Image 1 (cartoon, helix red, strand yellow):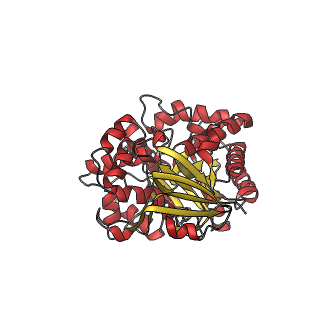
Image 2 (image 1 turned 90 degrees about the horizontal axis):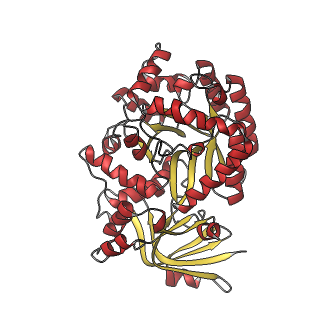
Length: 437
């Protein structure tokens, strides 16, 4: 039995923090301990108390004065788009046709998929992200490459082969039947293998015919425990094109309603331009609106109204994500920094405890994986990030004047990146330092 005892300042959330002074919403230990055995947290609390439970032969690792938090969670990311990130000058539909679809065509080559899957998960770990909900390409081999790499690292990840059978180049199209068959085979091979979870993944209404969305709905009925992920209402031109393709339905959201794709594990990327009817329908279904601020700003798509959606009578469940490659980096710290600005442009503010709740427990709740990750609770998986608020000269200088935990978190969110991530534990294994050697 492998046991380690981590020491540092520990922070984990119990619920959404209503205000910056809502101390009952989080658990903070200035000298905290986490006892880990066989990849799970078996004790958490004050270091002196946890140490008493450690016993003999436990490896002790002292991370003081750094912060230990649950590993970050990214609720919407396209792993085949690593070589698309930082592509200039297009809005969504042009960006897909000019950059994304040609790039994803390369994933016909299984070796290319394996290389990018390895580099992608390297990048996630480097930035402190331990769980993602990932889109693969249309090619079955791309999902096989992603899951194989994720399983090798013992990461808890959610992913799926994209289903798309129209309005894209031939090299990234399947058919309704092949999309169904490939998805069924991948579910059988990978869902529940180790820590792997499968997501049924019709890309979006524009690239799936009614026949394919019927197949996606059939998959959801056949596998009601699985996630479903797609895109919704990211861009005005996208919405208009969708209405042309499905004129008999009430609106964009109704497309997914009609084909049985809305449920408590349905992850809807972007959701910027929702009508009140659509927001009500998403709320009634318990589906999740995924906020992708760096992507929404970069592509000029619009401003997600985070606080209003949380406060409405029929509140939306919300997750946050990098998106990539429409997004501009792999860091959830940078994501929440841009998210703060989007929310500010909507006349609201997000306090730093709310930000860190979102990228840990909040995203775990949204992805229905809270029993496994997103907290530092006993009997959860030991996915942990170690953050250094003095990681750069600018951060060290600012820390000279910082007096509170809230100020330190806001500094990490505003100036932090992969350099602020000192270590990452994946199921109790030191993953970032292992990767560097």
